[in-house]
Length: 354
Ligand code: NAD
Image (cartoon, rainbow, N blue to C red; front, side, top):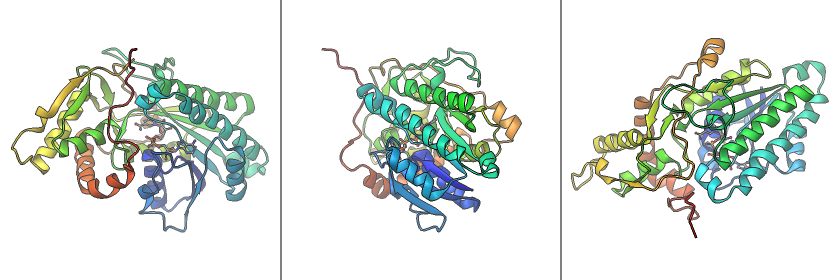
């Protein structure tokens, strides 16, 4: 399958590309603007492959995207390119509107025109796979799970922009017949995640014995999925998902933020104890909560499991050990290279009252 991946130099996109190329079933063109979150280093294990191609492209740039479609002649597109960090969306929502909404609109228009001109047999096979988040559903109380028919209630500029893109994708299917599938996934973790997100940020700070700020009381709950499990789920839906359908992806691994931080501390204490003998859990400090912080996310992935046979391979305990070990190994290499100085692991997304 000739597949265009947008945002393939990011955390999840690079995992998809590595997994797809390993299967030997794909030729991939990666379209990525290389923002602070995109790094070609994350693809160093596959960049020499004859089946991998890269173009530095902003998905908002019509001519560049149309040129890529016309030159590469894809059988499908998997769309992951996005501004993805909630805290950054609080500080500056404009770029989220541009990339996540306008960029998705642009891709839909170009894909529609390309698809409508394909010969019948290729037209029937074409797929537009939109990759989204469970954050579009808003926040859960103590009980219940997000299903595919849960009403949308996005609360942050990030989730509102993703919800908006989901609606555009849905409308392009219903109005124009564009063959789309959408997936909404819970929080991912694993190798190659930019160190502004909770798990890599805490891992790198805890490694150095630095303070570990935790939002609020640390009791917000997320449903964690190891990134390679997400990548396999995405390829499963791309290959076998039913057109016009939405699939939720999640690993049934709910943890409070404090439990996540403690797990990282405990892994590190076993792997590299602090010279002082101090337990890393003692490094936790509680700071003012993120504005509008959703309380709990949890996914019901039974549609994907029952209809398409996907199962997560890692649970949180196995996944977090692999992840912490990877960051330990990469601290001086990948991590040092992606932290180019523009982000210094400081806190983002605080609303300052004047
Ligand atoms: P990321 O921030 O690590 O990567 C995003 C990639 O998109 C980067 O390579 C960046 O350079 C690229 N990009 C940004 N703006 C672009 C533009 N205008 N044109 C072209 N490329 C651009 O994000 P991620 O965590 O890998 O998330 C990928 C997708 O999965 C996003 O759509 C996100 O909403 C969704 N998602 C993420 C999670 C998660 O836990 N990280 C969970 C569910 C869904």
